[in-house]
Amino acid sequence: MPAFIVHDLPQAIAALTAAADSGHAIALWSPPEAARSLGAGYFLAMIAAARQVVPAARSTAVLDCGEAPGLAMAALRGGAEAVHVAAALPVLAKLAAIAGQQGARLEPERLAAFDLGGPADPLERARAYLSQTIA
Image (cartoon, rainbow, N blue to C red; front, top):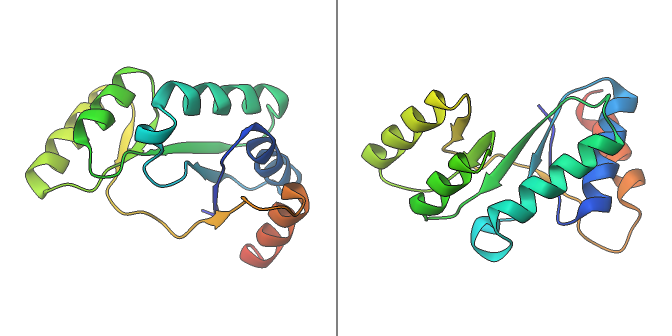
C-alpha cells in the first residue's frame, strides 16, 4: 500500500485526494515521533478533518510513537487505528494485543513513505508518487 508522511491538514487532504482520484488505498503516516511532538489528539483530529473533505478516499492512519510504548497506549485509547512504536518484542506483543482488542493494529516496522513536506504543491507530488508506485 502506498504510504505518505503528512505534516499538516493540506498535505493530508492532498494525499487523500490523490488516493481517491487513483482509486487506491493509502497509508497516512505521521512524521517520526509525532506522538511526542504533535500529540495523538492533533494527529487524529487532522486525519478526521481530511477524511471529511475527501470521504471517497480509502486510507489507514498510522501515528508514529517513536520509542514510547506509553504514548502508543494512550493513542490507542484515544482512538488511533494504527500506531508504530519501536520497542522490545514482549512490549510489542502486549501492545499488539491491546490494539487488537480495540480494533486497531500495531505497525512494528516503519514503512518507506513519501514525505509530502516541502514547498512544492503536495497534491501534484502525491499524484506523481502514486502514478509511479501503482504503475
